[in-house]
Image: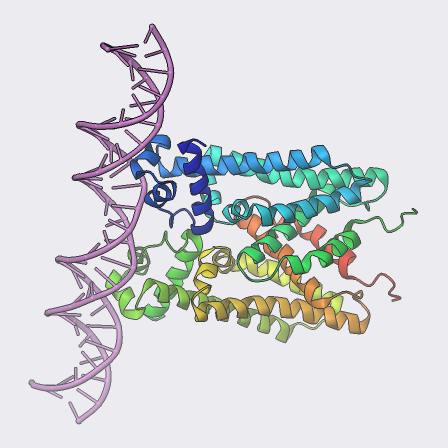
Length: 197
Length: 197
DNA sequence: AATATAACTGATTAATCAGTCAGCCTATCT
DNA sequence: AGATAGGCTGACTGATTAATCAGTTATATT
């Protein structure tokens, strides 16, 4: 791996676990075994380094989801919805850095006057919402999902997942313990009750 | 109002909007029209000031909820649940600083090795979860709520609200636009479908 | 081998900021 | 009036840190 990639990886971990302000460029350099001036050689400022980190997280998330949906096949919309929820929670555990970073306030503050940052965040959240919406629309077509607003319901499901993951990352409540209840709730909330199978 | 209360109020606003690291004691002092040494006279360190802020937020939240439930009367558990959800969202808009502060990472990081901080956070979140749980249990007794795990369902509802408020505070999606859908979803998810009224 | 370019570094700088301290007001009590 | 004390302040300190720069080493390229 190139030194630049090393730096990006270390910075991702540090920004995610300690936040932007509490991560010094010297720490990033130390973790990669270089001089801090080297970090500035590859990324002209701390903010630019953060943007590169956020962008790589965006690429990672988009890749993971497109890979998952390239392989998996679903019997109907409801199963696709449940599969997506499971995969989201799996990712939140497996790539905890990504979700920790997205639960920091800094990216959203930066997004207010940085277009690149705003676009990265939009891409990430649109990816999430679009997939839930797609599953709901498909489910309404095949009769597995009830008649409801797909976009708004997708947003509500994402809100729930976001909250659960945040509670886990903040050591408030355990996400795993809620998994079964969550799936059951989504079924009750979104499944077509009149369906004859 | 005493100078100490002034300082606490300014610090609440600054910690909530800019975060712990991005708020300087000089800023807090400026906002209250005092010298920064005065802030240190009243609160012996920045961390102690933050703890005082968090504690006052805790008191505020507990007060607001006990006041709301002291006045309101509900026909059944389902109505109490919906009322609580509405009041939570109302508070999140009306006392945005409180929820912004709770959506920062710093309090949870501090809670890891500060007992007072951990207790304040526990009090706040237990207040939320307990009320939702109480409404669900009451609803199961009066037949308005379906048979489901009250504690876990309460946590899921709180997760959803937490997510919605975070999305609003991060300028990602608008909470207000989801309100009707949210109430309808909670009804579909928690209401006893077999109920004869 | 000579040259050019890219990758890297040690030393330094300028700014910011939490926290300290000695002393100054102002109010209350005797 | 004098004494005591609590509230307040300006000036300072030491530590941290983003960013710079002049100069060195490694890697192609001709």
